[in-house]
Length: 183
Ligand SMILES: [Zn+2]
Image 1 (cartoon, rainbow, N blue to C red):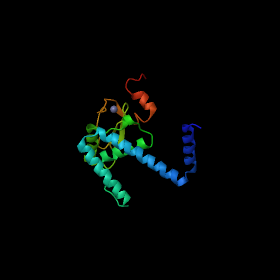
Image 2 (spheres, helix red, strand yellow):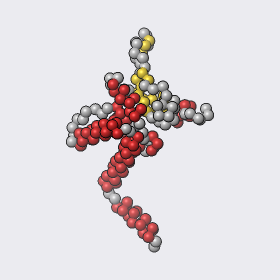
Image 3 (spheres, rainbow, N blue to C red):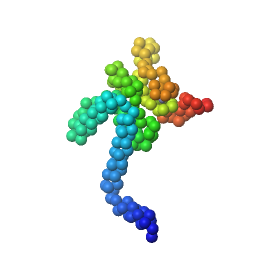
Image 4 (cartoon, rainbow, N blue to C red):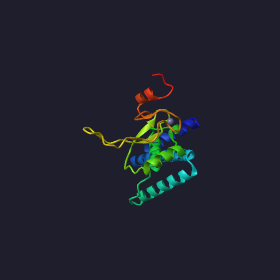
């Protein structure tokens, strides 16, 4: 029997003898490894200052979670970085989509400064970057009550792509709005 085949058999044996708990722990470890890979990829696109801020925040967030303590809420840039890493670990975002360059970071920081408790988000049709979006107030009888919607960008700051709801995550919207694709 060749070495390759022996190894394959051994591997199969190890996998088969794995208990359910082992399999669970392995899956969790692999997920964490993927998330950590994503964090490193994102960090490479960030300024040193921004990376320092975000990773200090995430560290204390997880330290609190480990200690079963209530942590301070994450800032929007940190939440975005965390979401991207989780999406990568879950296999719904790829390597090219792991980015938080200064321009994108600043938009999310501006959203925090606006004092809005929560936002919806819009996506770049081409690169998938997420941007905050705040709905205006609308009353069906009186019409708009004065607070307009707030778009933070008119086009993607990273690639110039069109930005809108589900423009990237929904393949149909992507077909309609993606640049360079004949409609
Ligand atoms: Zn873009």
